[in-house]
Image (cartoon, rainbow, N blue to C red):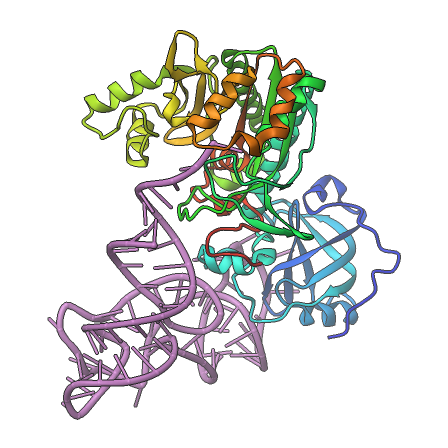
Length: 439
RNA sequence: GCCCUGGUAGUAUAGUUCGGUCUAGUAUAGGCGGCUGUCGCCCGCCCGACCCGGGUUCAAAUCCCGGCCAGGGCGCCA
C-alpha cells in the first residue's frame, strides 16, 4: 500500500489531551492503529500513541469517500495521522471521539504480527523480546520505562542536590584482576582489554579531586547466571564520597530510596495504575542488622548459612519473608567482601561493608573503603591478587587519599521493585543474558 | 557449569496420563462477506500447527535415544 506524506501536518494533541472540553475544535493526532471495530454503517479506529489512546469514529455515510477508503485500508499497527473535529459523546469511555476530515496513512505493518498488540492474547517473554520494538508499543510495557525515566531523573536530582558530581569512567579496562565476577574480553588494537564490571577503582580515585561523585552507566559481567535477576549488561548507580563513613553513605542511600519512592509515586500514578502495582514509601531510617544477627536468625530458623560466606539464595528468600521490605545487613565478614572494603576497627574479621536488601533481593552494596595504601596492598595479597596489576590505582593512594565510602545500586532491581516486575528482562529494553545477544 | 520443566498455526492454549477416538479441538490474529454506537462488538465462511534427527510399533503429537531452543531453580556473582 502506498503511504501518504506527512506534509505540513504536526501534532496538536496527544491522544489523552483530546478531551470533551475541546468539543468542536480541529485537532491533528498521530499514532498507531490499536484496534478496529467495523459495525457496517459505522467504523471505529482506536488510535494509540505513547500517552494513551483515542477513538476515531467514521460514520460511513456522513464522511468523504476518501476517509472511508483510508479507514478500510488500515490494519492494526499502521501508523496514521488524523485531522478531525473533536466531538463530545457519551458513547466512549473517555467521553470524546474524533470525526476525521482527513486521514493520512504514514506507515504500514506486515501481518500477521508476531504478537497481539492489544495484549488480549499475551505472548511469552521470549517471543516478546524477539519482537521487542513491537512489544514496547503496549502501554503496560511502556509504563515500566516511563517509571524508570522518572526514577533516573529523581536519582540525578537527589544526588546533585546533595553535592555529588556526575562522572563517567571507562568502559574499556586493561586488567581483569579486580577479582570477583568474570569479565568479557575485547580486542583493543594490538592489546587485550575487558569490558568494565564496575567503576569501583576509578570512582575511588576521583574522590581526590571531586570529593563526592556519582555515575550512572552500564557495566558488564560474564557470569553464567541464569536467574530472573541477573543480566550480562546492567545499569549501575554508583556513588563515592570523601571524608565519610559507611553509616554516612548508608544514610545517603536510604534517603535516596525514600526520595525516589515518593517521587515515582507522585509522578507515575497513571503508570502504576496501568501496571496494577503499588508500594509503600518506606519509613526512615531503614532497619539495620549485623551479619552476625542475620546468621543467628537464620540458624534459629534452621536455614543453612555458613558464617564467613555469602548468604545462599534459599536463605535470602527466608530472610525476605522475615523482613518484607528494605533493610541493611552490615558488618560483613572480611572473607565475604572485596579487597577494598575497610576492615572494622578493633575486629579485623569483620568489615564496614553493607548490603541494602529489599525482601530477598540484594539491591545495593557498599561500605567504607580502605584509604591506607599499605593495608590495601596487604588485602590484595590476601585476596590472591597481584598488587603489580593495580599499580596505577595504588598510585592514587600516594596523593592524600582521605577516608571514603560509597555504594552501588542496581538500577534494574530498583525498577523491578517500583514496577512489581518479577523478571529483570522486563525492565531492560534490550536485555543481554547468558543466552540472548539479540535483538 | 549443574538440576528440573517444557517445545502443537502469527500469538496463546487443549490433547501426551494409559500409542489408535486427532482428518489435531479452542481463542485470538489474518482473508472474504454481513451488520449504524462499538469499546475483548457481533454473525457466517475460509486460511493456518504437532522443534529437528533417529528408534520402537500394524499404528507416534503421545513411548525411547540424541540434538537444538526456551522457561525456572541452584551455583557463580563488588
